[in-house]
Image 1 (cartoon, rainbow, N blue to C red):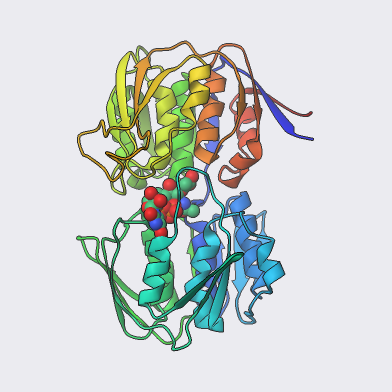
Image 2: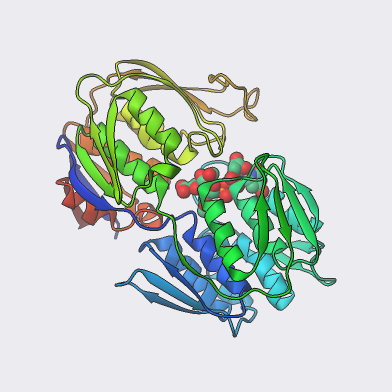
Length: 440
Ligand code: EPU
């Protein structure tokens, strides 16, 4: 039996939603608890599938995890860490990309790690070559097997001089989680500096790590012998905040996003204002609404922080289908992140995809066979359609398109959205959306 979400479009979303800890920080902070010799406590935990997956991964490695749903807090006790069996790990194959970040901590604790085939959203090749290369530089031995990767450190892990070919978030986290207990000094050039990375650094510093970040994207880590636990409140999810902000714009609504933090949304807010959205910043959140009149088209390029995030692109593309004129969006982080636009075209949007770099800066994907630039002409009248959710952000943008469209949409595959949007159906209902869940 499949779950079907029926959406009756055309109603502005109005009201209040609460956004909790960042999906792209919380699982990594949970992995960091493995490095400690004492329990850690993480607060502001969203009830999302990715947290459940990492809870289960920690549990099979002997970490006692207690999730207080009411308080939104997690305690993680790593004092009896052990190696998981192959069958325990294999049940998580394809679930998430987080297991790759267990490599460093497990090698420090148990001398080796086994990583099953990874999952995560299908938005490009999503290779792990940077991860494996940095681990080899720390002295790890990587053994690729048909069922996954066995990785060990027979001579221990030593600090290294590293430079990433591209400022990858995951590979930067890999270096941090490995270098903190490696012997000696690690220097990482061309590191990612996303707010979630800074939050992870604060957690590691609390645990006893010595880490400094230079303005030129270089991170320097002095290895220590032992780390303790941490107590931390996760930064709010800036991607979920941006998604609700876009939903307000697309449905001509008005949404107060409790927990949204201006500090982490600078590039998004600039774009929001340019397209015609209004916002007001408060101590505990941001109110977003449609400013009235026609939305303005624009030229947009996704980029690593502090640029316009790739995860903000999809809901913003839906808003651009409602702007009066031609917009250009150049996706420079992932080579294949416009698959979701096909459903928008079926709903009446005018979007053409191109292989060329249509932004002002050529990117890694130019002159290759990737449809990574989009030309959007608007405004288009959207109508309801049958949709199968392709990935997390694409799926959420389909929901908001359906909410703005005329008529009925029938959406399948919504389980994917639970990976990163806490209780999104309750939130939609609370905002006045006409949505109904059924089994078929
Ligand atoms: N890349 C490689 N080789 C590697 C690692 C990355 O070529 O070994 C490439 C990727 O294919 C991509 C680029 O580098 O083209 C950037 O990838 P990055 O490593 O930065 O992404 P990630 O760590 O896998 C996280 C988020 C993504 C978010 C990106 C960019 C998590 C769990 N995921 O992915 O979030 O889009 O950083 O900020 O933190 C989402 O939330 O929907 C999502 C996909």
